[in-house]
Structures are given as structure tokens and as C-alpha cells.
Image 1: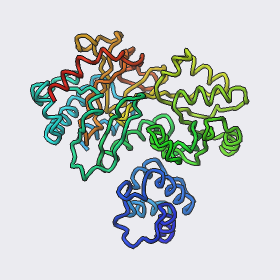
Image 2: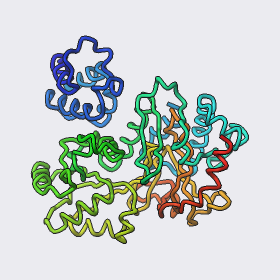
Image 3: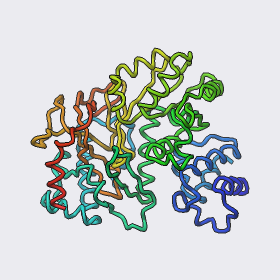
Image 4: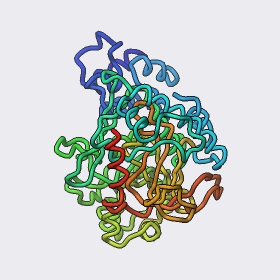
Length: 74
Length: 359
């Protein structure tokens, strides 16, 4: 599951690597702005073939939260 | 998050009756006044200088308020500058300074959650396919970067599979709209746009295209200035869209960047309703006393959302009137408000000057 999430993060945020996942927080790094957030959501929905609720989208404020939320759909 | 806000958010949106709301808001607003008084020095000076200190207000209308224009001239924040994650700016009228609103991670999450609860009340919990009545250039093209772009982006996250009804030149994109309607195939969908774009660039362009939007839910917002120039009011707006597109589910909303996340949403009777965690007070523009219901005056909005800047009680530059209280149609409770227009510039001077002098 984490591999799928990693692939989506790399693509949606346009990153070369995910060496330090603890810095991956919404609005805290330049790459993760509101446009990237929507790309990320769409990417995760595609990868997991699911539909995220509004609450999920608001809660998904870090890489760790994304793993927690996507576990519901894995 | 303050306790009163949690209580307000735990109830069905727009369902709190006046008395219960008043009691909850009084506690929550007093808590926010104390919090901002302790954390924001310019706010403290205003409260000490003009309001004679941060006393516990005995009613919501006794809570100190700031003129909304103060956010254009002062940097008002109640969090450390390094904690600020998002700085919002208002669209501003031509040639005017813009407001700057500072939010830390918590404040930003609170406002998104609050806005989501309001929108979900009319859209449902599932994110719907979304037709944006704008162009995607509004947030993709840096030359456009504007409050409008930020507004579109802020709302877009509440929908999915976005399509855009207008080209970058704001011309109708018939192919995009038809493809979107084919895709949704009779299922409910969400439409969002600024009121004047919905009217001028969507309705006026598409009205003869034979579109069936009967499964759509339109949420629209923004100034009515261009609409007034065309002599279109809310009743005509609704009836024209109903006739041209069979679009019946239409909700206008009133909000401002200075109280982002708190939106007065159009209920079943066409009036605007503040969500549970906020309220509207109408003031006489001469005495600043509370105007009786049914009497137009200057709109003051209070909200439990602003945690990172002292924006919980603001005197706006708009005129409005409270038409009903606790009408209860389909469960919509509290004040039903009509916004009439902008205050002519000169009238707010007295108040602004007093506050500026105190600061």
C-alpha cells in the first residue's frame, strides 16, 4: 500500500525522492500547495480505485495522515 | 479549537435556534476576545483605547467589534509570525489596499472543516462531480493569480472530476460542458462560480443551448455590483436559471476573506442564514446601536472561527436587514438575512477614524 502512496506523492508533488517523509506536510512545503493537493487526491483515488469523503480531504494534511486515511480504502 | 465552536459544529449545520446560539456564541466570542487580547498587541491597544478593556460581554451585541477595513492597514495576528502557514488577501475594490489574513495550521484546518460542513449541508457528504463556472487559467496561469483563483481553488476540493465551463478568454466552452453532462449521466453534480460570471458568461451564453441542469446544485457568490448594473436581483436570477436550464437547487452565499470559512448560505426561502457558529447583527449607521429586526443597517458578523487573528467580530461595509428569526423551513434556524448592498463610503468614516485614533 505504501508503495502506491509513494508513487502518487512523487508525481503529484513533483518530488525526486521521499527520503524525509516527516517534512511532507500540506502548506508547509512549497510543492504541496492547494493545486498539488487536488492532484494528490485525484491520484490516490485512481490508485486505490475509491472515492474520498470531504472529511478525508481536509484531514490529509501530511504523508502520515495520508497513510492512515488510505488504509481504510486499501 | 475553543469549546463553544466544537459544540456548534457538532450539531446539524444551520439548525441552531436564536436563543441557544446566542448563549453559545456569547461564551465563545468572549473566549476569543480574551485569547486575541492576550496574543495580539495592536488588538489589545484598540480594546483598551476604544472599548475600555477586554471585559466579559453580557450579550453577543456587546462584544467589541473591529471595522473590516482595519485588516487593510494593520497586520493583525495572534500567532507567532513563523507559525503562519497561509496568508490570504482580499480581492479589494479597484485602487484599494487589500486585507491580509494570517492563519496557522490549526486555523486553516478549522476554516476548511467549517466550510465543508456548510457545503455538505446542501451537497451531501459525498464529493460530487463538479462543473466550475470559470476557466482553469484562473489558478493555472500566474498572470491571473487573484483572490478569484484562490476562491475557486478553495471550493474545488469539495468536488471531483472537475470540468470548466469557460475558456481562458471567458468564452463558453460548449464541448467541455456537454462532455461533462454526458459523463455525469443523470447523477447529481455540483456547480460553483462567481455570481456575475454565472450570469454574464454562463447564463447569457448558454441559455439557448438546451442544457438540462436539473440534477445540478449551483453554489454562487460574489458581489452583486455587476448584477445591479444589469438590474438582476436574486429572484430573477433564480427564475431565469430555472427556466433556461431546469436548475432549481441554487444557493447564493455571502462571505468575506476576513472571516473565511463562515458563510451565510441561502436557505429555502431565498434568505441568507449564518451557520451555527456565527451570527449577524444589524447596526444603525448613525448611533451604531442594534437595529430592530426588519430595519436595514450596517452588517456586523460574528464567528467562532477566527483563532489566529482577531476577526471574530467585524463591522462590514455592507448593508443588510434581518427578515426572519427561527423561521424553521426545512430545519433552517436562526436569523434569515438579506444583504442590500454596500455602505456609501462616507458613512463608515466616523467609526474607522475612532478606531484608528485609538490604535
